[in-house]
Picture 1 (cartoon, rainbow, N blue to C red):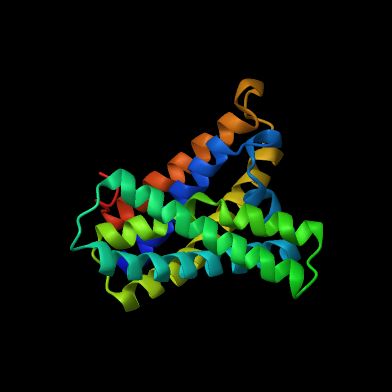
Picture 2 (cartoon, rainbow, N blue to C red):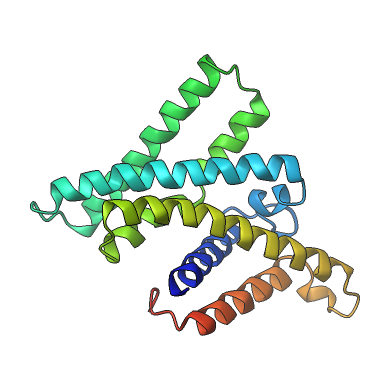
Length: 197
């Protein structure tokens, strides 16, 4: 149960960071906006899960090879970033060449690859010393956790938009940050998580 809480908490943190870094209209990231459109959200969630699993597996294989060398954290960041970029380019190539993907699909593919959760998963796997099987499970679980986190945030965003009692200065981005922060704190409390401390 603690693993499920940790994955959901990680997804909430990732959604929060993505909201801060990649903020669009009303402070909602593309992932949160996509969650209001079920068809697009399902493809986004599937792509995030796919990128999480692929990046997780490849980075775990690399970790097994370089653990004896002992690279610094900065080198590991570069390697994980390179793996993610490689997975994205291979996926984009196959999507364009084999499936004749539309611009919209390619946009969703790019947003999925750049999601902060996808790059966070290999670091979590490395920090927690997960086995190869655990890394695969972590990739799948992170994708599922992202879906749950985005659905919770989408539901909250709708409720915040309907609430007439929120002062004008807190509408939009500030209200979303507070809401996601409270959700993160709540799950952190339930899980008694020390993952980010």
